[in-house]
Length: 175
View (tube, rainbow, N blue to C red):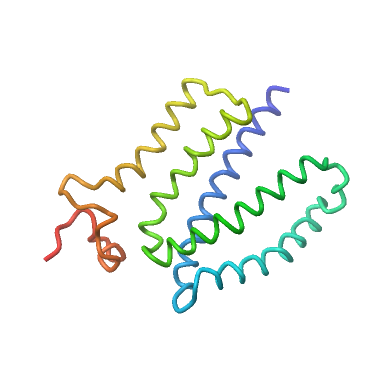
């Protein structure tokens, strides 16, 4: 039983890392894809492609045939999550990436973990252990430092996009 629990934790960590890498790659691809088009068009294309791909994944994994296991309440909550993620979240992400680029959007989007924890504690009655709270604080330090600036007084959010693409926007003063 304990070994099974440990394997589930490792599985959770692996999928979390894969999810983070996928979302990171997504923002870079979105930035290139949005050149010359609006956030609404990007949203339209990704939702239209997302539905059949989700159906295929559900079919291949066997989950499509287990739809009856889902309660109406659970299905409703997942529907709300889908609308919030696909419509509100994606639209805002596409607008942000189109306006300030993926390099400057990602540190601010890293705050989503902070919001997830707060919402889980308030609405799901989840509890934080000291080690998890410390981990959250440490995870928030990186994006906070990037958004705040470096020891040279350069601020990532104020740097021109060209300097960020070449790696000169934060540490090295520009001429």
